[in-house]
Image (cartoon, rainbow, N blue to C red):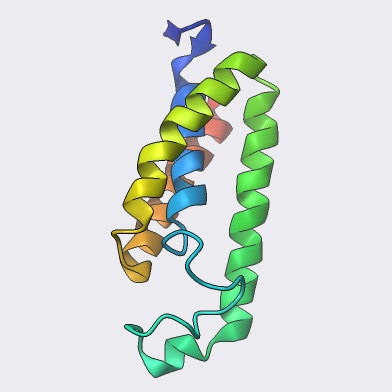
Amino acid sequence: MEIWGVDLRWGVALCATQWIAALYGAGIRRPFGSLATIKNLPFWLRRANRVVLVVDVAVTLFVLAMWVFLFMRMSVLAFVTIGVLAFIPAELLSHRIKVIPSFFISAGLVGVSLSIALLGD
């Protein structure tokens, strides 16, 4: 099925990727690779900088790879339009959700994006 000349599955994958970019870590309220500034987390989790850094790098690389993958399958206009329209509500939500739930939502969306990308072609 196509909307605006874009296969619906690529649009859904881009929406999921934009939501991952916005929701992972509940927005840009924390430094990259650290949870030390998030006060409502357990002490041991705020101190797990190595694990957090590895996950942050992995999520960043995943989002970048998905953007490239989807950019190659969509027109520039569709990519930018869908990307912006998907990112705005996710960014607004990211400031109202805590870090732990946003992590699990992002993890689920990674599964959605990966399944669309792997089963799509």
